[in-house]
Length: 263
Ligand code: BG6
Image 1 (cartoon, protein in one colour):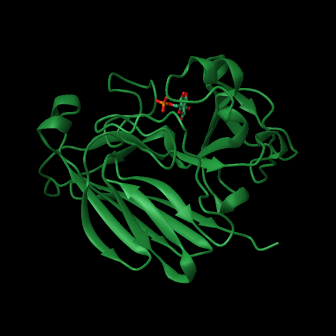
Image 2 (image 1 turned 60 degrees about the vertical axis):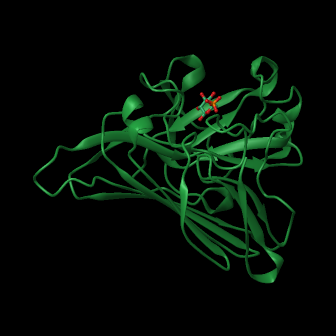
């Protein structure tokens, strides 16, 4: 499977795969890779990579008739631009995408990084002329897998008291505790947008999905090691509980900014 390595300033680097525009590595001042990638990932064209930052578009896991998380993470993207610390990939509608989803779209994914910060921006444009075509509706998510020493020591602040939909209990709304969020069991939580989002650990804002498969689900996943849940968490910024409606000629932008805090 083809991977592109991009070098950045101060010894930083990323690896990104054309399969799904999936970033699988960010080498920074702290570690050789900030992102978790499973030892059991399939690495096959047309299959999702288990780790890094798969892109979910136009449908979130299990929310409709498309394959889990839609089509963007398994189609071949192309490189539009590349420079030191920067790469932009693109994907347009094709026969393969139309087979799954009958809409025209132009997508770009732009990654800018150095040794202490990483930004990735997914843009989706409805290419019809204004007032000519029809609006399209979709969900979109950057499904970021973080590499951790031990998930049980993770403390996520910034989501205190926020409302989330719990996928494990049928998406019933729940309130997050007023203390930092910890992960001590299987977690599949879709946060709903808030009027006053506060930055979450790792400089994330907005309404993320938080996911860790824990013991039983890890054992049931063919492309994920049985013990690997202990060393990862997914914090996935995106629009899930409120899908996006994109008018003809309009562009939707989903930004993710990760900043390393120096201790
Ligand atoms: C998360 C979902 O975003 O992705 C979970 O909330 C899902 O429900 C997980 O299990 C992994 O999905 P997939 O398709 O990569 O196995």
